[in-house]
Image (cartoon, rainbow, N blue to C red; front, top):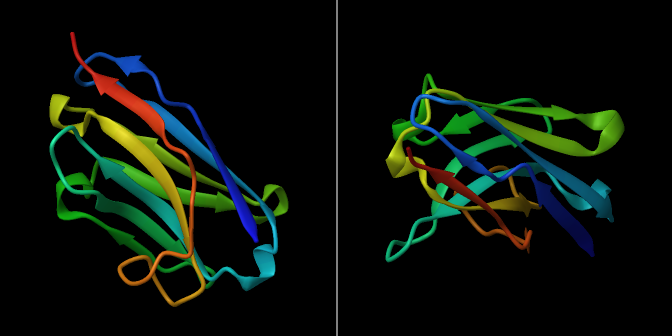
Length: 120
């Protein structure tokens, strides 16, 4: 089993920045890909960004150039740096982990989510 704990969600003004963190514990050796999904009210959960064990990154088109995913292997933590935030970025952000090659297929573990609200 793998446990994922998110932190960093907050209320931020449009154009602002925020950094989310996801700390993993447990059987981390079984995980290849980690990253973030989000779910806005009334919408389906969608991939935001993922990073594989080899360092390959994958982003949703809507966040390319604004969000950056990174990881600290020593801390078993993945980060999502979010810049130039827009109201449409408002959502619950979920940390995700998969045993497969990326985050666009089966997700094996989910965090409980952290709320990001972009509003003036």
